[in-house]
Length: 335
Image (cartoon, rainbow, N blue to C red; front, top):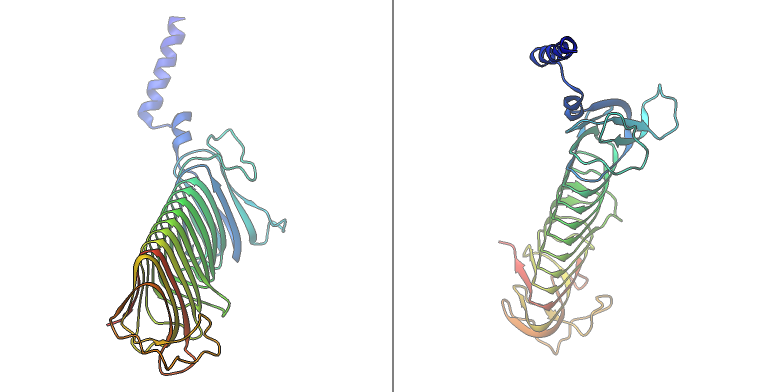
């Protein structure tokens, strides 16, 4: 027995000095897999917790890499011939190598990196973790707790986080952004089709929109301010509302718009533009009321409603529907 025990110790020491990994070490090793895919492949992922990073690249492949061990499988869900590039892929991960991944499971905890074709349609779901996505065509994502950072989305984006900020930069197409508790920041965004709209809502947090060129922009927050900076789209409709905070639009001096602004408790309506007052909130068919003077530049109206037109044309290019329940509405000329 002494000889057998000594032999086991000797073998264990030999393995440790030669660098051979034990089963536990293999469990912790990163796992990765690659599959040939179509340019517009649909890729779906669901994690219990962990950060997800997705990058678009020029290759016609989906490549996945996890931060820790377990089984990783890129499972085709298109039912096509396995010799053809995949058109639909689900990323499946398990905690341990001996457990086989099952479709639809979300119990893996760990970080995941994905490289996908630039035309990919990506769907992400996580319960706790940040999402970072760049260079894909379409994205639909949701997380219960974590921030969402998006860049260079080329066709459409729809994301939701219960607790975290949302950032969208250099994007095209429809954009629907929702946070329960967090800020929303959008910069350099434009439509692909005329019907593409920009929709941003948060319960608690500020909303900042910079150089957005959608013709339909809707933003709302319960506790926070809304700031929009940039030119108005021709035929644009801007609906910006907050309960506790200010609404501020900073637009070019040569803008043309119909304005319906409303404030309630203690708020002011401040405008750098001389508004020609009209009698009602609907711009269609309205003529300026000649019995009411223009709103002087830089003047402030305390409380109430301001309805009018600014611009050389009687039919303005855009409609601004602005409201703050407990705060001010400001129209500023961009310097």
